[in-house]
Amino acid sequence: MDTQHIATDTWRIDHLARHAPATDDLPELATWLQCNGAAHLSPIERIELAERLITRRRFLIGAGVLALGMISGCGSGAPASIPTATVAATRTVRHAYGTTDVPLNPQRVIALDAFFTLTPLVELGVPVIGSVSLGSPAVYPGLSAQESANIVSVGNGRLGSLETVAALKPDLIIGIDFVEPPYEELSQIAPTVIIPTALDWKEQHRALGEATGTYERAERGIAAYEERVALLRSRIPDLTVSYLSLIGETPLLYLQGPKAWAPARILADVGVQRPADEIVSDDTFFKALSLEVLPELKGDVLLYSADYPGISPEEISSVRSLLANPIWQQIPAVRAGRAFQVTGAHWETFGGLRSAQGVLDDIERLLLPLA
Image (cartoon, rainbow, N blue to C red; front, top):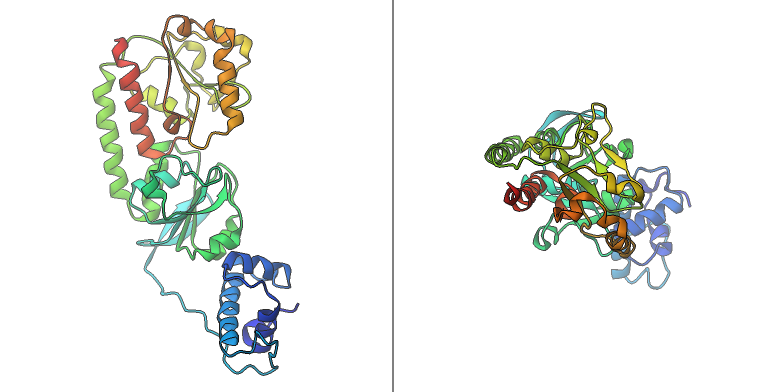
């Protein structure tokens, strides 16, 4: 089906109206258009075409033409025009993929992951309308039911259909380069900013504030974190701590080093001591452990994460099997009664200042009584 000149040819709009699915779902119609001759259009152009198709179909039904299959070659009405977006004031932001002009005060933001960008954006008061989610139904780790009520999922675990993104009409798209995004395609839909994972979590938070015009709020949040860290640092017990994740095929030992996972950085911030063999100078941030070496963990205390929002039944079963394994009881910290489960929503699916404060809550709750 030829859609090359469809924007200026009412007959072709009418022709599509007769053959397109009887739905007002913009992503569904855009996907159908892609498979029926409109693959050469960008996602946002397919969404605009779908809007025109819906408008034209409603006119034809109202005129009693479409239902009777009597579409004529010369349409009786002009094609619906696509509203022209208001040009907003912008500023230039540097990021992992170059520079992008972004709105000074974005109002329709999409987050490309459920961890590193979504929760911090909500904390910063940014109006997020869509995000990658976890599970089915959609779960947004770190957000309350009220905070996530009006967020539309744009993919389960990773970005899904670009048409779904385009249909939301975002004015800013934000992600992190933990997974390579379809940057060029997203940039055709809305200004797109990709934060480098090379930054530590505090610098990522500042970068999100810079991209969304909430930098001062981001700085205030980090200052409050630093103030609390200073208060806790003098109260940390003189004990070494190992930090494990039990999620996945094999336990992961999170290390202290230049590229440490955010909760491990927070342990270092408050002055928690780590066993010497859990401190590195390179970019390694975790080590996969076989069950047989678990008893070799040297920490006086063991902190471990064993769940997270959206955890699968298979993962739950795997964790339970590990905790029931006799090898687990051979870990020195477990034998000493100093093995503590931490809050997975903060340690396993870390997302910004809210998670950082949650990690500090666990440190205060679990470690300070040992002093």
